[in-house]
Length: 319
Image 1 (spheres, rainbow, N blue to C red):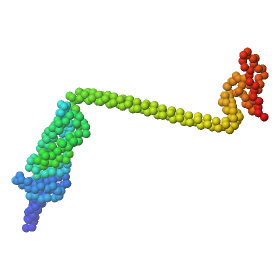
Image 2 (cartoon, one colour):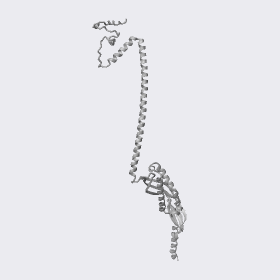
Image 3 (cartoon, rainbow, N blue to C red):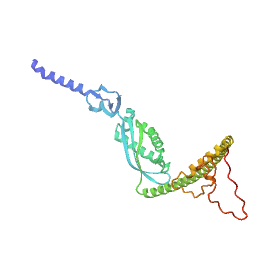
Image 4 (cartoon, rainbow, N blue to C red):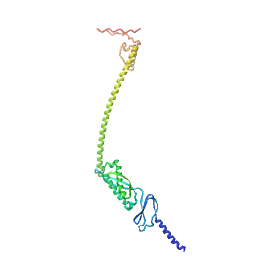
């Protein structure tokens, strides 16, 4: 009797285990789950854990749809946009988003991520064209690019919320001139830069000439002031020297004359190549071999010249 019931018990146990297994589902930290019963959203599970539902999925009862919870990325490449002055760019951009409202995501696009990204891609394309079309080609290559990305992000957020999505960030990866207009644009930019360089160079030359003129005037003023001060100091020094000489001469005229003669000898005979052609009886040599300064009488006096005055007698040394 017992042996006949064992297969039935095992079968019942297996059915219970299968039913229990099919009524359990696990949600990890990177996912969120939507429990759908007969086509209607029964519940939404956004926290990780183990949850229960009706067993089996027959007759459209309690099916679980898992959607991503982490940040997702949508790339949009080689979008041809036209700026205000008619130039065209090839733009690459991407969007960072996440599924913030799972219920709305299920209701609008049936939880289909590809369908949601297709609508988001169309909105991003439209926003890129609008934002670039309001600006010239310099804006996309300048610091205004950050403001453009923020404007595109704000444009997408309203439409993305209707899909149950939240836009975290929008980035423009590449902005290149299209091959058709790149040569002409580069030539125009080169001409503008050359003209700007010439203007800056002319302004620099003008400023350099102005500064050189100011410097030259200052040099003249400083030199004139220095020469004036030097002349004043030189005059003061000469006056002081003359005063000192006058004081020395008044105290001892004989010594002063002797000192001046020694200084003249030192200055005139300092070089070994010095040659003097003078009479030994000249005033210059009065102290040369006579400390008293008495001039010697000429050995061969010069013949008298008719009508010339007689030479004065040499001074006698004082006793």
